[in-house]
Image (cartoon, rainbow, N blue to C red; front, side, top):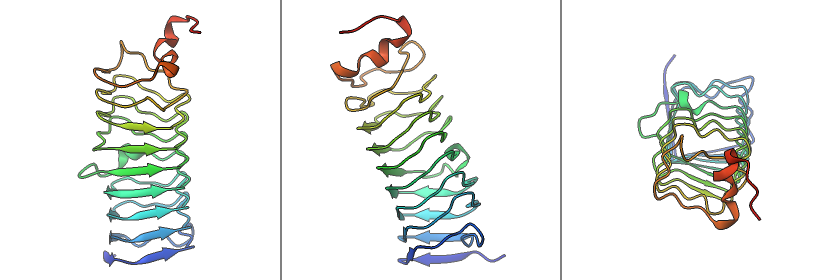
Length: 190
């Protein structure tokens, strides 16, 4: 099967459930209201692409490249981002539902999560240095042996991070969310 190259194109309201997105390179493309749920996106390269109001739930992203992509107002449940092509991997998420997704052992380059629901997301053994969780719900998110130095959790909520099992040097927290660092000690903070 031949690979295709698409540049500066808009894709709107397309379901890729029955007919998958063609393998190839998509550069500076915009996808709006597209359905990728349960789709196989393997061996597709997205470079400088934007995704708005799309559904990626349970999609297979093995060897998929996301380079400087923006994903906004999307549903992305149960996606294993650690299976992506990690070369140049950079995604910025805004107002997305990422519950039950996984970034296990992934190194994220200048990642941004803004107004995202990240319930039960696996960040174990991730390099999240300098990450900004801007107004994000991290209920049940897993941080274990994660590199969180200079990360910003000041507006994040519902997180539980063990400072003894993660590298948190110079990470930022607010007084209102310190309980997320002390949860394992079963103490009451008023």
